[in-house]
Structure formats: C-alpha cells, structure tokens
Image (cartoon, rainbow, N blue to C red; front, side):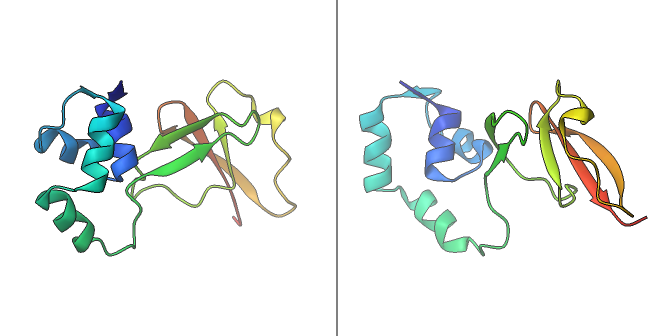
Length: 120
C-alpha cells in the first residue's frame, strides 16, 4: 500500500492538492500507476500551470550520515552550505572557511538543521 504522502511525491504535487482532490489515505500501487498513466483533468491542469521556478518537492540529505527526507521547500530557506540531522553536532562538519561566519537554521524538514557559511 502507498500512503497519500508517497502518492503526492510520485505525482509531484503538494499533499494539500492530493487531499483536496480526494486521493485516498492509502492506495495500491496499481491505483497509483493508473493515475500516472491516465491523469485526471485537475492533475493535467496542475502540470500545465507549472512554471518550473520552484520545485514541489526537494530531497534533503544529511551531509554527515546520508539520511534523506523529501520535503516541500520554503521561501525563507537560505542557500545551505551543509544540512545535518538535528542530533549531529557541529564538530562533525568541516570548519567554516577562513573569513566566513557560520549560522544554523532549525526546522528544516522534520529533522534537519541547515548550516550557512557566509561573509560577515
């Protein structure tokens, strides 16, 4: 069985859209394949309206352990130098380059901290 979130990822749509168009909370692989093969009008329209400027989903990957998570990107996210799971310590990352200051951004995805190295 496939969850609604997994279906939204595969269809490259927001979870809210999946809910709004009443995709079930769980569906079979065959049901999802059928939606992919014969998309309903709302999905065709959604894909036609895409500008390609902002992805619907991004893959977050921990630079320490490699753990990954799919998440909806937020406008307020800066360009991260590193991403780490929230339980890794900063000593597990390389030091910031000479002349750069380091800051951390909590709340990235479900369990990540974004690290930003930038000129002061």
